[in-house]
Figure 1 (cartoon, rainbow, N blue to C red):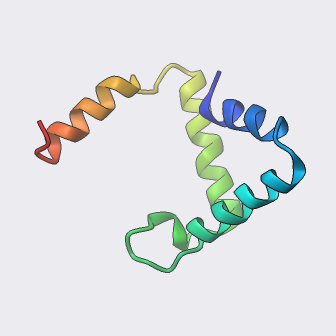
Figure 2: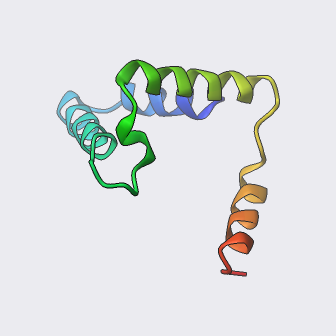
Length: 80
């Protein structure tokens, strides 16, 4: 199951009030004007397009194993 599908399954099982809080927080984080948030400059349509592309690559088997990705990121940033 893809990350998007898993996230949607979790969201569908949440109470409505909790779901609204999560979506409100996600919107806040995505629209933050801090330069540390690379998604802030994307429109909703652009962001959905990026996520759909990512999901398609996952289904095509082009996704990196998460453990390997985290290990590489730790090495790259000097944590290992």
